[in-house]
Length: 284
Image (cartoon, rainbow, N blue to C red; front, top):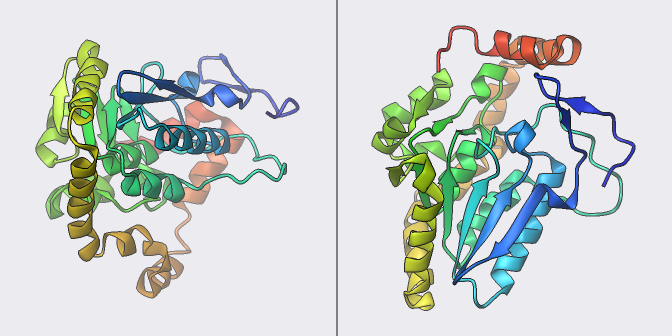
């Protein structure tokens, strides 16, 4: 997509591929479809290219009458490491790029159930994408959390308080904790935990169960459950940045230089030093 973009390298020196149409893969299967986040060298971090690919894949799944449910997964050893802080600049090519909020609302509103199959890290936006799916199947090696506060940021999408109870939501959002699969299950972040070699098979099993049910009934029951949460101000919570009280608090905290300093470290000293600074005091 962007042949002239500067080269990027992982902390261990591997060159990161340029953005391409293969950053998200779509594969129809027996009554369902796989959508695979396909940037494994950067742990499927979310950039403009991945968001465009995700939008296209959802279009395909929703248009195919033979697809009754969708499985979202990540290529390689992680589900999704969140937003790509070193991503290339979006090209000025006239193509619309959906926001993370747009994509999560598409999953929320989709008449077809969406299952997240999570192995490895699902942090930041990755945690939120897994959370907005109708079901989440976690591998026993999964690491799940909202780590944006370590950068000095707030969460892009405020879904965790609807998944976990009050105390757990505060622990995840205020400490930036990353929890293992069993703890994520206890907190309500995932539906079930299986061995890492079974996570995709288990997701496919659930997808086939959805395919065997009357589509209209599945669609109605998804709507009914979602509606209960919408009556609890779910959508307003997702758009929390538009709340005048939140805006006032954000302006009051504008003198906090933690996030700025850490991003400066990333730009000037590289990813390894950024991680050391960001994760000081955390053991995962």
